[in-house]
Amino acid sequence: MASTGGDVVGIAGCGTMGLPMAQCLRDAGVEVWGHDVRPSGEFGDFAPRMIADAKDFAGRCDVVFSVVRDTAQTDALCFGGDQGILTDPKVRPEIFVTSSTLSPRYVADLAARLPDSVAFADAPMSGAPYRAAKGTLSFMVGGADDLVARLMPLLEIMGDGIHHLGGVGAGMTCKVLNNFVGVCGVVAVRKALAGADALGLDKRRLLDVMCISSGSTWYGDNIDAIDWSRQGYDPGNTIGIIEKDVRAYLDALADGGGAFEDALLDELRALEPLDLEKA
Image (cartoon, rainbow, N blue to C red; front, top):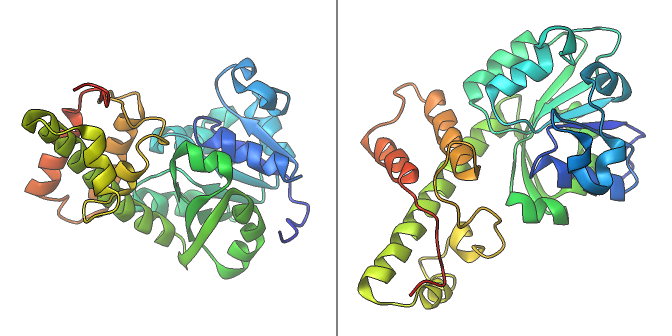
């Protein structure tokens, strides 16, 4: 592992992805702090490294990775009144990295609003919490070459597939396109499993065959490792988050998508909880 240069790192948004990312950095010897709106007692053995006060958090960190849910939470984190981590020049981090899945259009707007003294990159990731815990995420990165070179040792602790795709926004553009395909896979596998039930085929046997055949998908192949794989749709859960991801992709398109995308969102919102053991 390359030296991280002594940068103190902050993870803002220590949820199902952010917390294991922070734990990977800590376990690799990086000085890392977390920030979240939830009580520190919810973060297990990482609780001593959680900082509730946003200004205190920002003042300790050279690099902040934002893993909050959406654009509203990103705006609140960065510019939210006297608690925005980028509003006070005395306690700003040197580098701000958004690892949330957001519209590329929003990322361009965010870059234009950041203070000149704060370097910015987008580095959304893919892989679900089980890969975050293993440090094997895939990162899609947009930013200046020198900045990405500085971030690379940190990214390589958290992931094993780091792709620098161009300037700011390139990583997010790749992420929303990737997620669009991923969501298509989720819906297709769920429809196929429902079809197996209707046609009297064991769902487990279908999954076994698909993973070594033309029906192979990330979701279907890893259905037992993905912690949210059996969820039905709810705006507050991970299926709700991937609906947000599709909307981020559509926001970037000049025409906002078409009939296929509308149907995909309808099918996603219609998903019921999955019971793989049900005959």
